[in-house]
Length: 453
Ligand code: GLN
Image (cartoon, rainbow, N blue to C red):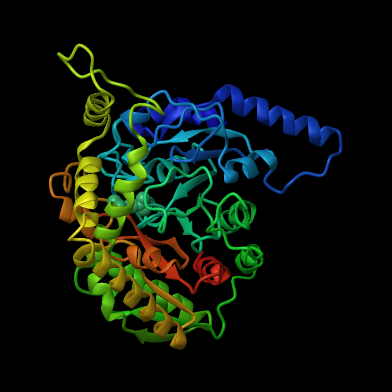
């Protein structure tokens, strides 16, 4: 049914970069055989899933939305993909994304943007707009996304779906092609909070292949989603992430959701996180710095594309590398590599990267203080509903500003979730409600998220 739906709508929505109908059906058949033989099966066995094209999948192309990886078929599965397969979840295909997960709209994909099923003239969010739109357009019940600076939560917000960024280290990054290693975290993209919890529980937990993986049990997310209990919970409204700069209809749905939580027995407090003012500035130094280093491996020798420089008879390795990176990377990727290389260069390191790291600490301290008076923090997920294609494409700063509410969680390594809060009155488009919790308290997100359904 999901493959039929894809055949019918993906020409318009363009959620997928690659569909593996044959592989998915074979996996589904294998589960049927196991069920017929009376084998015990995982709760999600036979439930199909779409995976963001930044996760390596053995035997299936993995491009990260970039031309430089066109045609690359990884020889190994990411740990979380191994877990999906192990649970008997057929993998429907790989979803579209901004190139190397840089962007908030999928307009930076080398293979053309995905569209928002609510209005095909609008963006489905980014970088994981393929994973949000695939779920929102009912082409898949579940998808995997990655969130380095909001790429699971903001796409969920603008497509009326659910997205969780787990605690940093809560889900293995082995096989997640790194954008910024200290910020990247994979997580579930779904239509309900309980679906997200079931998937979170499956993909979470320790992995010796990832040195930053936390060696502790997965927080009790499924139980929290089932109970949906917020009685006595202290909900902190972050002063810096509401009001001015947020679209009226988004703010109105946010206020309503807070009232709903109060009606369900929660208590509201206001908290202030003054360092959030500098979060975007710090993020857009730390991310390009790490990205410039992580993307150095695409050198025309190891993976994917190799381009011969024009008019050179016997090109040197360096000339091939330069020609390949020139042809293989898009403008946004080049912009960030240049910015990151500059910020890391000797003489500037302390002024830029070093300062950004200090700001990162201040932001984490703001969270620690806020969590002394609140059990969870809440805000609108994104300042606006889905914008139109082209609206922010020529203005990188405007695009970056869309991340204002989501980025602090990545800088501090804490978990965050976006759940739908209803449609904004002025444009009839979905608005997102963000919930944040202290590290390894991911279950609190699920209690609050489920209470809002
Ligand atoms: N909008 C963010 C950026 O462009 C998204 C990053 C991410 O989460 N992959 O950096």
